[in-house]
Amino acid sequence: MLRLVSFVTLLFPLALSAEVHQVLATAYYRTWSHAHPPVKRVRSGDTVVTKTLDAGGQDDQGVRRHPEFGNPLTGPFFVEGAQPGDALVVHFRRMRLNRNWGWTNYRLGLFSLSADSIESIYPNRYKDNLVHEGRNNQVPWDIDLKTNTVRLREPASRRVKFEFPAVPMLGCVGVAAPEDQAPPSSISGPYGGNLDYNQVGEGATIILPVFHPGGLLYLGDGHALQGDGEPTGTGIETSMDVEFTVEVRKNAKVTGPRLENSEFLISIGSQPEFASSLDRALGMATSDMIRWLTNDYGLEPWAAHLLIGYQGRYEVVTVAGSMALKIPKRYLPRP
Image 1 (spheres, rainbow, N blue to C red):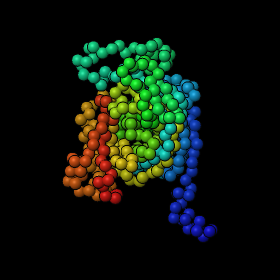
Image 2 (cartoon, rainbow, N blue to C red):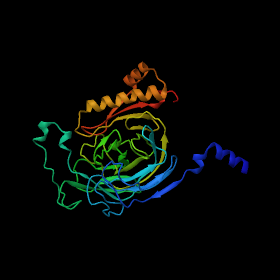
Image 3 (tube, rainbow, N blue to C red):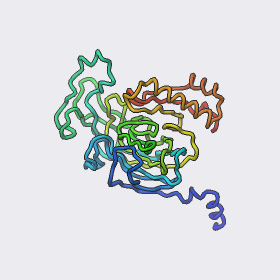
Image 4 (cartoon, rainbow, N blue to C red):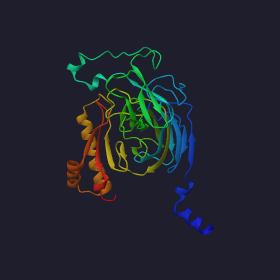
């Protein structure tokens, strides 16, 4: 037995030395900056169990842990050995709702509508101070943790029952932005960021380029449910329990965020909302998918083009922001 253990240790040193870290942050940040001190240093292969605040800064007990709205982030996590040019591969092992309420905006954002429809839209006011002090454009949702469902508490529709299965996801996952940039936690870019992509859930793997030593991984902005594009400007905002494993992929040739799950490879054309058109984001996602298929899967360029042309699926990640391109994994060779 001792000989076997020694042999396995030589073959798989990282697997045997991987640790599980329980991390409860005491400070939260609202920029994707390399200047913030790490909440924890971890190694490639380690697992982190942690919590996130909601977009308004409240925790699982409803206590405000950050004074400002705008996606307070848990992190950064410094991953030993990660250097610029590498990638962080983040496997979300567990993503669970941890409180019985959330909230959303009351109305679609004007950015989701045509100009003529805006002229007759209903006022963006519901009730003063119903969800947060000083706000009148938010509505509350109840979350049933036992049945994993969400229900709009008020207002009540005479025609539609607003009760749905919950699909927990993180709006924010990213690394420190390039150079000395410190973009706010409300936007996205090549570093990931406020992706607001409803595929970032339990079982998903996010791949992010590294721009600074340690990568400096952040996450936050839990949603109990969100439609494609986040057209109201919110998901059902709530706090979250999150467990993830992080790995360093050396010399990864990754220039922006990618996502992988059991069914799809997904390239994300990630850009700040309102910075450019969705056409640009679509082009970013498509160009990245070509690189992914040719570099990692060995497809000829023409084969990558035709596979995208006849099996690709596009999704709006954020309205007036990012796009995603999905390729079914069942049509791919082994990488």
